[in-house]
Image 1 (cartoon, rainbow, N blue to C red):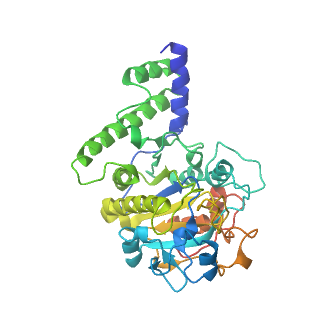
Image 2: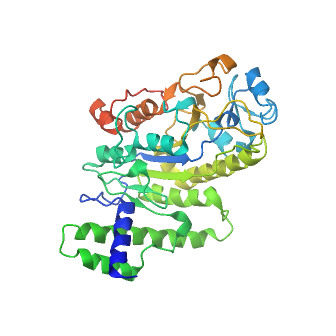
Length: 396
């Protein structure tokens, strides 16, 4: 690789690490420090076949082929049931009071574009304002929390996502590519030499040190996982690794899980979506287990860019919709609740006669959650979510 190309790759790598002039400290502070993990289901999962409106006759009329029978759904209350694919993972956490769900959640963005709405949520900026793609809401949250603390934020992704981009440095680690760094040790040394004597020298060197340390740590855990105790595929395996880092050093984490765009052959109690929910649920349960005592200080929020059409389509799937359902899990959670504003599920309450409405706007919802978790002031919340009014749903 020639010098010009190497410099180009170094700049991309530093951007991926979110390097800036002011580094965050490495360790996650005292054992009681709150941990937050945001899990983004990219592709827009079908919330109505996760949180099943069992009291709605319209649900069964609208989904003759993919509805989950009331007898198959796991009862949560008189109106809602849980997908049976989560019987061995999320249901036990629900019974322990460590899971709540917020239906009719999401953004007021109505483009139904995956990329547009994902960006909208990750940036967390006002609906009608011009967007600053250099400022994600989790980076702003890290900035509010990080002053004078030993907080570390990390994206468990190939690149630093929008949600964690900003003025504060954030490392990222692609869990699927452990042991295969994008920049080799010799290349890292050459790049560091290029910046020697400049104001970025310490930032460049520190960035590579963080990545190398995490890679060594995670590679050893991958080898240990090969003993058969942990499945060697998918989110379940990644979740345990993420938990080890969040248990010991990371206070703010982000991971995304793809493959939720079920236009064709979605299935009901079994099938395509059920299989994905099963894998996700197992991963979250393994994460909770691996966190150990730190689970008591942890909150996991599962979000998606939007929901899906309430009526099934001609391919026994569902199309891009609007309102979704967010999951909130953790030892700190006030669980066993279907939280937030709700309406009866029927044709007359659908948004544009096709989708769940959004009654629990995501910035208000998360703002209320963060206020409870961290004791944020109104001014701090305004930094994280400008122009939003926090709404406390009593989730923690």
